[in-house]
Image (cartoon, rainbow, N blue to C red; front, side, top):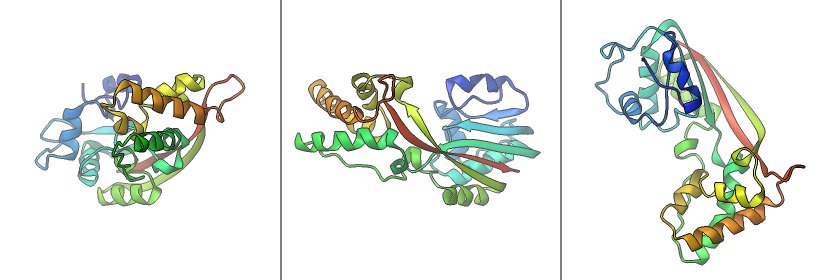
Length: 219
């Protein structure tokens, strides 16, 4: 086992001898790649892999340049990188709609709702310029960033009420709602559901826009 997939659905990549993948839930690996200056892929017996593949698992490094440099060191001379990251939060209705509905309710109830920056946390690699800057500094070459704007069914396809409950756990809304009492959560969910009423498809499912970036590079 030389790595883990960036999501449970990608965990099968861990058994591929020519792939080195990440999973955001593997805190030990993320720490080793992004935070410990003494970590060396070669010394750890990690190297010679042909591909680094991650789906929304590389946006949380405390030191992204060091992390991507470590990943580069773990690849063969012809190694390649392919990662998906969210664009800035304000480019995706998926995150902005529940947040915009939640904030007035929280503030009316006296909750100090401090909104993270649109390029913070999961959205920290949200532009082509930022990705090119980070990967270039980490030693990767031939960086190509392709933007995708798509329509997404919230939580796979739910009516406004069900999607609103899921919306409580999307992006910064999840952070703001953490630890809030059930009655406030219900009030916020009702506000999100009202917004979602204007975003249903022909099946009555909530469908909203989302923007993400797919980036490739070579060693």
